[in-house]
Length: 392
Image (cartoon, rainbow, N blue to C red; front, side, top):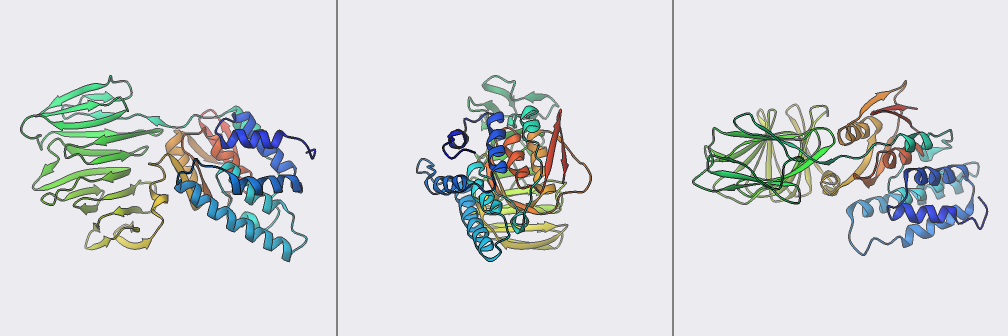
């Protein structure tokens, strides 16, 4: 790159404003990867890292990534000072994470990870992100596709009405008497869908992709507000000390009175994870139970429940329209991508090793997630139709 070439700065500015096309995104990474020793790029990125504006608002995803990036830059710089034969690329890669808001796995920073990349192929075969959408199944078996339904009342049953708002949410209201505990509804999202639901007690639920929530129209049965969840959901439970709120996922139960928490209960994950943001909950399965306090997470592996202190922003990033990866391996990341972008993931040969961390918007095209990951040199991708091939 010529010393006065403005192309990198222009592409960088467009990318951070969310205005870069897939082709421009690919070009940005070409410039970075092809100029490993260019001090101009390093200085520009360092400057932009410190001055990138975020409208003065607190953004958990950015704050998380910024802290990680600064640590990695420092570590990479120290490593370069100690081992003069180490190329400057690890340091550039660390700073470049500020551009893409997705950071690179720690193993990448131990040495040179060069190699060819498929940026143009990924951009040319890009896949759109998920969208707001779900199917509501009523007690009589009728199915309502909510993204096709008109705004307003979409169903009436047993003294309740179900409405779709202009903002794309489902709201239950009790109109006469009470709902019927024998009438069961299910709200379900497929891969590539997300939806928000307000239950009859005014509890609000954010449903992630490939998930379902089942409940009766009275919500209360035998003195308990009870719902059944598969997949992942974030709950803001309306306070009602006389009627505990219970979320059942398989054999696991999460019991609350009124609180904010996230339940990740996908069947293809090794454990169910319940993360508490506010209030108090009890997680139980079989004969074991744990009580959570805010900032803690219960990790349930087949009835073996352990408590961890966590950054709750990580657990609810999806609800805030972000991906935040915190030392995840490529299989974990690709399961998330598979659900949200409604794609099939195929591993071509040996599964790439290492872990990755960082953040990126959930509402960008898939190339905006894959290209930064590929820039590490640890993993390569190829898109054919709705299949993503992953290789070393």
